Image 1 (tube, rainbow, N blue to C red):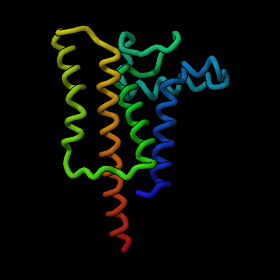
Image 2 (cartoon, one colour; image 1 turned 90 degrees about the vertical axis):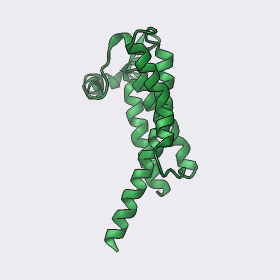
Image 3 (cartoon, rainbow, N blue to C red; image 1 turned 60 degrees about the vertical axis):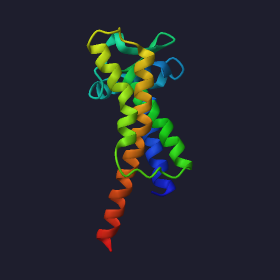
Length: 153
């Protein structure tokens, strides 16, 4: 995948991640307030938005739960790194499974009542999953583009 495609993908991820911080940004940029109801609806389709699981910064809530925020922030960091570093060769899903294990353990232990919900643990486990997930999305895009080039030739 060439640099320009990676840059476009990074910008899309950046805009998506920026959207979850809209309530935090509105006090500094009042003209963004009109976006809040639309973004709230959009993010409600990808996150349960349970109030007790939402991160808060200076009294302003994010539009997604801690785990989703971690996934998106991990994706952002991974996309930023992949702008400058070649994509890791992945031929199977072992890295994705390895990165998802902490998230699954957290969900299972919380669901079984072993401990109460921890925003930092959910954020971190989501972050690991987000980092790995983007690598596989990039790899899938590489395969798709290669197949498209093959068809054209």
